[in-house]
Figure 1 (cartoon, rainbow, N blue to C red):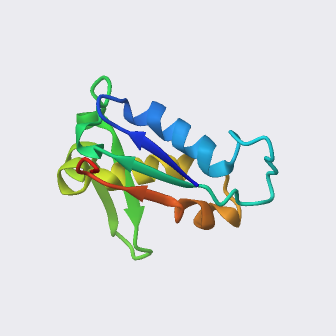
Figure 2: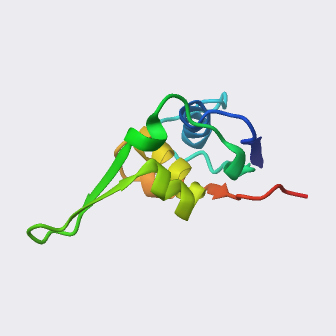
Length: 117
């Protein structure tokens, strides 16, 4: 069973919390924290999602290659221009529990920029 969400006019963080809860299976009466629920989440219209405040200019995403001086920084604004799906995926990734099921759960998330028919 798939849980379908329209991201049009929704705030990034609030949408990410709802998606993370469904991926963890907390909306199900059969919830058990050590079992991946198996429920897929489909989010569409990601390009029309909003961000509150000045986060577009101020929010930074950092990653390091492991080499000296190779710390990469990217603003949310740049990430959004490149791929808005990645912004939502990173927000959900940060809200999932840091355990072995994290990768399994994030694979159940399907993201689409355009509207579904």
